[in-house]
Length: 465
Image (tube, rainbow, N blue to C red; front, side, top):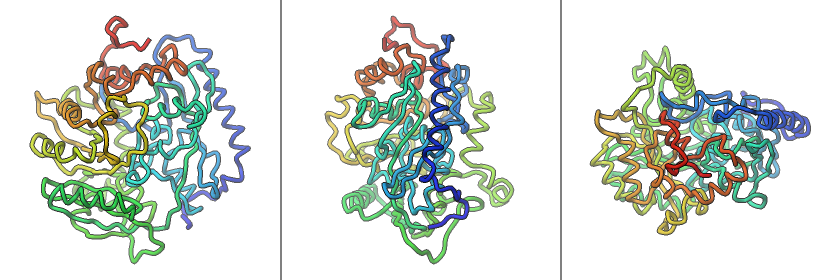
């Protein structure tokens, strides 16, 4: 399989040269950490904007920065072992273009082109192969981590296994990821998508379960357009296509789903079918798209927000949230959603439970029997004054034993937060990798600093130490 935009470099033939450069970069970062004298919190600077919901008062903008922008090299592609080793600032688009000539792609490819490998690990990225393989972290084999003291750890399920597992969902609070080795999957040049439409949630879930148990597809996701319209997108690799659709300019993939029963896309275009928007695309008019459609995409929007934070709302921000609901509790959750929120479309990604992740508490897992979750994502819901729909989501998730990613606004109080996220395992790794808490702890970073709130005093119980 060839791709005209793919680099001609045979990455697998040059690992020694790339590794030598990598070692020098790691030593630079380690030296900066060892020699720092500041007491300011530390966060990371990358060449791409963070793929988190931008917040006007985020205190992390004023942190001392460790520059990771040059950790952007693919170090090795092993087409026989079907693995890739790369630095964390490499984007998935770069990996896709480099691996496609070998007939391979990452197993999990997040929907936006400039999501980085490190961001996908730390932020729990998933996509439409997650019904088979879980999240991106579940496809990873080894991490290299630079601790706050400048030490370098090699982490895998066999070596520092708890550190390896806890980096998942840590949002840069346990150290600096400097290398990732992950699995690839064989892929065909095209993807044939069949859009199955259902009028009830029950029928929709039955179809999801049927494909999950049969494992008869390569990709599976969908969108919920109302309480009576559910579309399930079943993707399969094919060697040839009678036509190919593209959604990178005038047309939007999300708008095609209620209208088409099937579609063919090149593999690359399938993987980035949502780059201009998962459930809503702007501009909406044909004229607007003709003029600006190539310019308005996930990266341009995030760059603008990162550069001009004062333009972000002071209060009542739009709701952008991903929640994970146990498959058996989906009907309860959606009954609440249809009644209390009633905003569509909702992106739906089935997610296979690969393990009882160590970053969630044993109490949370104790009642969990489902082998499958549904990741339900809401984008662009406007909040009415006096209502905090983010908090309403959090409260409802507690009722149905669900959880959420922390990329958006988070309003958990500290006790509730640590009843979900595993403080015991987190603290065990934190003591090893960041004993002085220079990267902040997870609750402080994602639930307080992100909202512009002051760090609580040690006497309040916020400190892990």
